[in-house]
Image 1 (tube, rainbow, N blue to C red):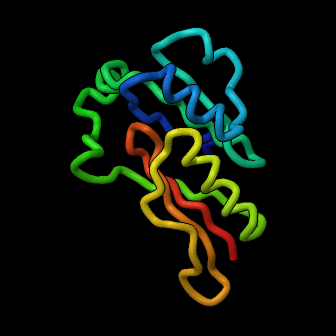
Image 2: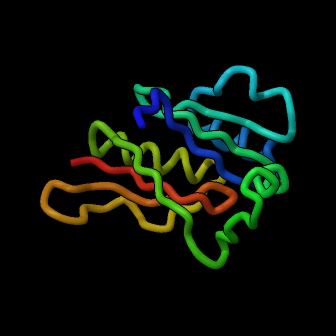
Image 3: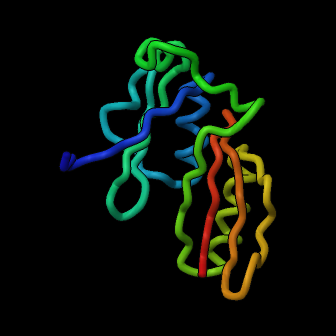
Length: 131
């Protein structure tokens, strides 16, 4: 197989709240996915990695099974690259102000490594990394 694109699909409780959160962090909306309360979509990084956020019932139908209960565990952690420590610190403030939860405060975690971890309002986990 040699696919030309890959994207992620995640389940959320409230598409409108998700749209507000990722917009507040400055992520670029994936055009055409902002007119419904069933799905929202954003582009991440220089390569425009797509993450679609579906209302959980819609994703459950597509999965033909249950959506992960993030209050009981984790599904995946996405990593965002920060160009420098100050940028990571700025993002931590933006996450807090946008309604996200910092679960790992900004800090050095090894020689030359700096970052923090956060979750969005639905519990999807991210870390921000700089080295």
